[in-house]
Length: 502
Image 1 (cartoon, helix red, strand yellow):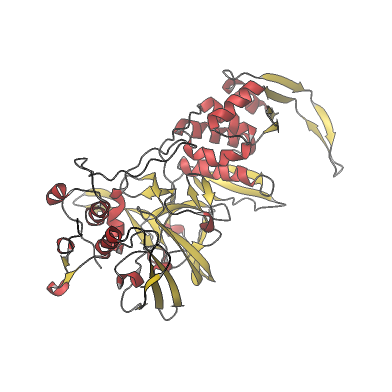
Image 2 (cartoon, helix red, strand yellow):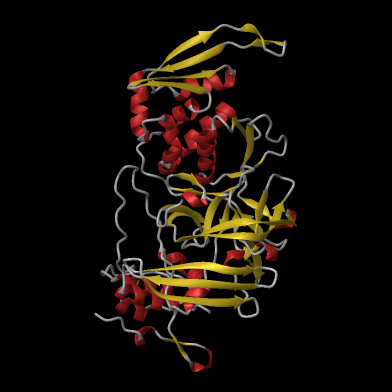
């Protein structure tokens, strides 16, 4: 059936009719599902607030069908430059397969995102990735270990309270860096949904010890492991937690040890908890791995209980009572990936260590119990210019890990795609919605458990959110843009449209 253009026309100021970009994109996809539109900035002057974009429409054979350019300025739109909401290129994003840099991402893969409505993390599809050169950045920091670099208009999820008629209300919204006020607090962490990997808390605890205070020997099918510990309080905890795990214990008497520096120290009684081949193979099978480094791709799929147990074990091995965690960044970078991912998934804030910096290749960060960074304590200063990037997600947020160890929820690009408006379509990756449509579209992606690693990911089901009726792609995209969730024509008549401003 031909696309009904009249059905999606809206009236704008002055009574003129306007076909939203989302509708034009759906029209384009209906008629040319295999065609693509590629966009690129061909001129960018942030100081003068001028940007020129080029859009190229190609058919299935790669033949250019149409080319167009468009200039936008700050006087035309306050959001003329979608690239004003970015972070440096060395900042990573948490995906369903672990931490990734911008150039390792695949459009459509699951990334962790924060929902302002539910105050929880959710797995959502990555819509787009954008990079920009030589953009101005600022340093946002406090004296408690929070320090990030971002563009001045980069958005952050914040919470604040207001009193109305004697009642106190709590609100959450996205706010630009240059508009943060002392009344609000950045929401830097939140809990993630439980995963479906069949790993018990006891098994997760063992793995957490093995990757920190343990050792694994693997030669072909031969697999052995042990956990070494000498701190009396830690030994007792390990004994209790391994009661249901098959193991044996070896003991090393207390002794004197002289180190290469010439100093001699008294060493406590040491204990080794040995895990036989059957136990180790069972552990590997539960995690779905063939090499211990693959744990970094598996932890995103653990249950909440298993995540908490593994994080507890890692802190018992290489952490301290203040929440500091240390690792050799050159040799055990993947262990850092595991620990920071677990912190993010469990809703634990990660900051720089304020007691000591990285020394001799030893990476140090601190896990905190609080979920917030109060804007009243933040300082902001110019940090020059650098190349930046930003992802686009349906909820407008993502979980970032900065090179200094800071892990935080942050906002993503508005992805207005002004250059595409004159062509009426989106990029080769995804529809370009207006900023209002993106902000209102967060309800379109309800959270669902991630598939177990190794199993095929089911195709997205195009059905009405209210009655379950099957929808065509054009109906699905347009109803999400207009109502914030997929609706069939009958349910649309009963729903209240969401207002999206151009």
